[in-house]
Length: 126
Ligand SMILES: [Zn+2]
Ligand SMILES: [Zn+2]
Image 1 (tube, protein in one colour):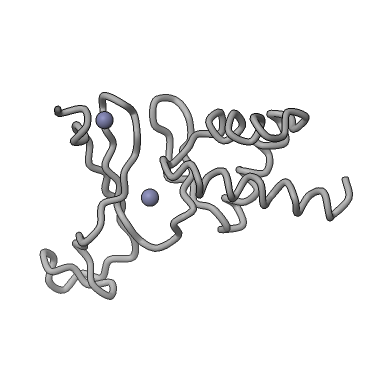
Image 2: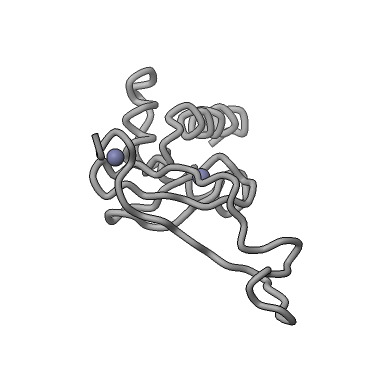
């Protein structure tokens, strides 16, 4: 495969994740791209997603409802999962850790942590 085609595919995949803005699964990314580019294969989309996650261009935020979800937001943040509509939201303005120190764990140095909230989003509560 030539490098130029590769770059175009990567850009399509990145833009899909960003524009969907729902922490999309590979399936959702494929469906989004296939609407405009019906010749792209599912395997190509899946391969680009996992390669980009490996290279740190996208973030694989883990498996929800049986499929990995991808995030274009590489800044440290948390997620809220709606159990009803299965969308994943960013949680802003919340940090249990400041510069590797936790306000709750004096004397400990935190190297990493993960935290996910789940429940109902405002639309599903209504
Ligand atoms: Zn919801
Ligand atoms: Zn996110």
